[in-house]
Image (cartoon, rainbow, N blue to C red; front, side):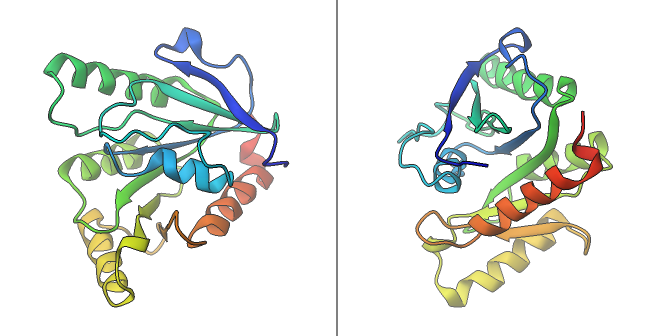
Length: 202
């Protein structure tokens, strides 16, 4: 897979606008400002392919990134941003749920949480949804922004996230930094492993 051959295919707000392909999709979900776009840029070794907003709550579309006509990385709208209206928040929730419930191409959903903080109620609700709606999937959580923690803080914070999300031994928690190499190879190793499994065929 040539990561240099990557670009945004579509920014969608409804299923009619989703890519008309059967390529496997790997989606990233998390609260606003958790760093989904920054992580996608880091995974692809690009500075600005995924648009990074200076203010949370700005991503209001589902962004599909085509990687070498092999897979899509999918950036879902961030949840939990309180300064939006109830109607906007409900609309974003419906958009996320509509994609997750109707997309057979979705191979794996990654839950992003901020490594600096205790997971929010919204994070916990999303994890419960993943366990209920996709019981055959591994639960993979990614703890972002680890570069903002001291080494002495990291282990304690990862343990805190494990406990708050009630992760099991079968679940996976990946520390991830956009400033270094933490997590990049691990995420790609998991994607490649999933692609190699028979279940990846749609």
